[in-house]
Length: 160
Image (cartoon, rainbow, N blue to C red; front, side):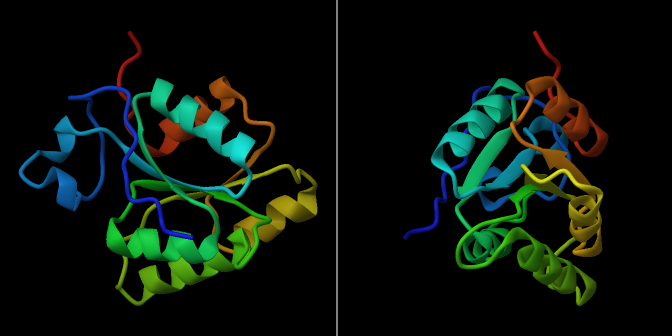
């Protein structure tokens, strides 16, 4: 399956943080939207999360598993990754470990990784943190909770 390389966006000219992307060369980072990589294999969860991100004024790309996520991060470094845990091919925990290893060896800049999973037990949260995730969000996704968490890590555009 091909990797989705299109940034999805609902607004323009919003402010953001992070490393400029090839698509935004020449645009100051304060003039562009935050760029999030959503790593999710479930179609319904993809639709909901991408819509929420769009409503927040965030540009989003989609990867359907950890293998696609690694390639996407190497191609265009996101400001933040929302990572499902249970996916085919490579799960989110292994992907987070590999991303953090690349960040430690200097091949990728550091960016936050937030776990996104239906599993909410203390052991699940601990496994996410041990794998290198910065936070652990539970599904089903709640718009206000997601926005609150993203605001900890990104400068989101002002709500109209």
